[in-house]
Every structure is written in C-alpha cells, then in structure tokens.
Length: 215
Image (tube, rainbow, N blue to C red; front, side):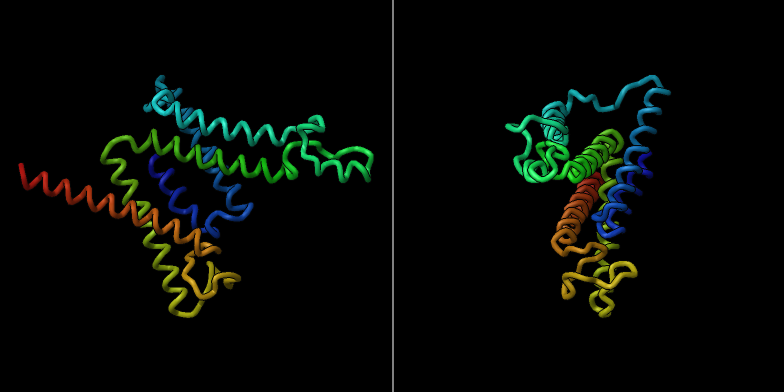
C-alpha cells in the first residue's frame, strides 16, 4: 500500500503536472482504487483505520464543508433567488433555464470537486500509511527524490535548448524551467515542497546520527 501510494504521488507531476482532464481523471481513479483497497484490507483484518477520524475531526469537518458547498452548487432546478441569475439569459431565449444551479458551469464545478476529493484521499491514505517516524522519513525521501528528478529534467531541457514537456514543444514560459509542468509557478511550488521534504529528511538523518554518537 505504501509503495503504491508513493508511486502515485511520484508520478502525478509527470503528465503535465496532472493539469489536464485525462491526467487528473487518471489520478482520481488511481486514488479511488487505492482507497477501496485500503478499506477492503481494514475490513479483512477486522480493524478500522489506524489513525481514528476523530483525531483530525476539525480539519476534516472544514474540508467536508467545502466539499458539500461545492456539491450544492451543482444541484439543478433551484429557485431564482438561489440559482445563478445568468441562467435567465438562455431562459429568455429558450423559455426555460437549462439547469438553474448556483454554478454557471456545473460540470466544471463537479470536476473541481472530484479533484479536491482526490487530494483529500491522498492525504487520508498518507495519514494512515506513513504514521511512524521511519515511514514518514521514507515518504519524505521519495518526494524529495522525485522533485530532484523533475528538476534535473527541467534543467536539462532548458540548458540544452530542447524546451520540451515530454515530447511536446513548450507553448508557454519558454525561457523558464518548468520541468513537466506547463506553468512555471506550479513547478516552483512543487520543487519548493520537494526542497522542504529534502531539508526535513536531512535534518532527521543528522539528528539520528547525533543521537547514535551520543549513546
């Protein structure tokens, strides 16, 4: 389970930073399958989740409230005071509003909700899987290593003048290092998180080495 989750996290930035419909849908599918396997394993072993939900009930409640609010915005046939007033524009032409929801684009809202639930699922699996110090160290090392590999790829593409994202010619931020991300700011955020993981892992190793010398 841990290796599968780390593989998903490490490969997620590969297809354009998972910022394309097919890419984020594939990420959502992989996360959903992993959640089902984790649930099945818990059921087979006759034990619940290792970290009880009540331990994170505050953040979980806030997260679920945001998800519920997004879901409500996709509900059709709401009365005019609640529905988005822009639905009245096609209603004036067609005689009836096509959807009458709070969201002007319910499909896009549902997609955003799917992506948010995907990130929540990865967080939940990470919370359950990397609960010990050793497991957390391993996870930080893998994330830091993945960020280093993507950074090396980005630098290689930039300094060789290839300016490619996989086998596609870059169409934005031509003069910037973006790795496998179309947007340089997204890549900078990803590498920054990778750097934090690297520093945390190095600090842990130095602390462990100091403790061994002091024994």
